[in-house]
Image (cartoon, rainbow, N blue to C red; front, side, top):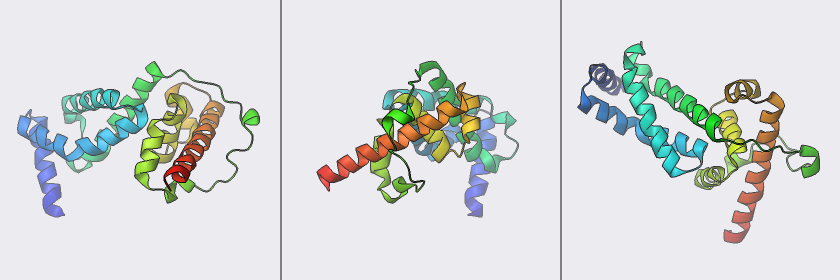
Length: 183
């Protein structure tokens, strides 16, 4: 494990000095995980690919700001999440969702999606409407509070909460439908 940290540390230092091979190595190490975040948050491969490239350009351009080389992965992830939020703010049209009219589709607090194969959940998340997909990802996978989501997305806290509830209801409905058809 220590050797891996030393390799990463050396790669970050070289990449900071503009070494293309070190940058390519870092890209190879982190691109898949960061692409998954981009895909989950944008909902489509094309936007995710564009965002991923932008994020690595930003990261490599600002690598001198990273104080601890071993924290590159977490630092890069923050860049990716922030860029996804910035992208979403430009591209999401928020739909109002009246929880009273929808009934009590989501009463239980159990995180039932954790019991389903993640590939199914991931694919279904990508198909959610933009606003609820974004809120769901930030709340569930990035551990943002509704207050943080509201501040970062420029929406009210109640909109964040209702979009989260809508995402949960749609996910449950769509996944259970898939499981019944294919199960």
